[in-house]
Image (cartoon, rainbow, N blue to C red; front, top):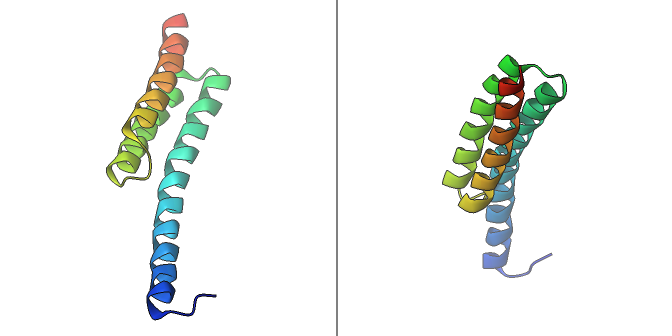
Amino acid sequence: MPIKKSAKKYMRVTERKTEKNRKIKGAFKSAMKYTREALVKADGAKATEYLKKSIKALDKAVEKNVMHKNTAARKKSRLNKAVKALVLKK
């Protein structure tokens, strides 16, 4: 446990930031998971719907500095490529 007052304050701040980041990460991870599940089930309509939600969640994560913009761009690109392949195959 910290002894100094400023260190105690910093621990409280870190706890709040960690909780905020965890919520944002959970949002985009679950959206991506639902997109992948729709891809496995070969449901193009659901995959497209969840892709939009995933992109929105990833953009919010970048906006809140939870994720680097290039990482988000890579994840969006991979998901989009997979959904596009599924939709065009049908």
